[in-house]
Image (cartoon, rainbow, N blue to C red; front, side, top):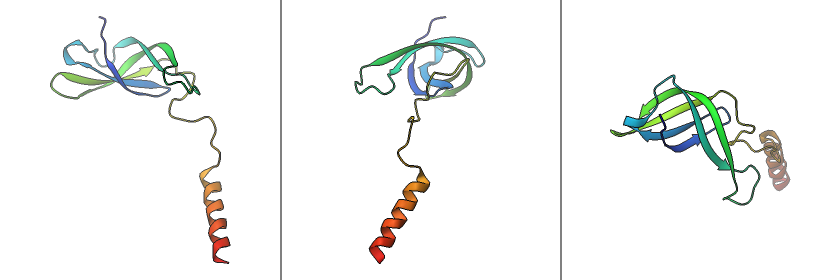
Length: 108
């Protein structure tokens, strides 16, 4: 059965989408999802990377009387984690240390 949905969340290990209640997959069902996400590190918001990922339905929630939210776990993760930047300039500890040094310098 071919079904279309609206992606509402994505991570390296899975995704969530909404679909019409009468046309959605069932819990535990294997599916193949085709979707696009903005290309990692691109400054062009229309520069998309396309994926075709197999996985299984791991959760179904009612969003309303005619819409369900479906969570799918990918069989193989995406090659990147959409939610994490590759490098952080400073760790939280370094930021706190820098702030404390600045505060001490102002108090002297």
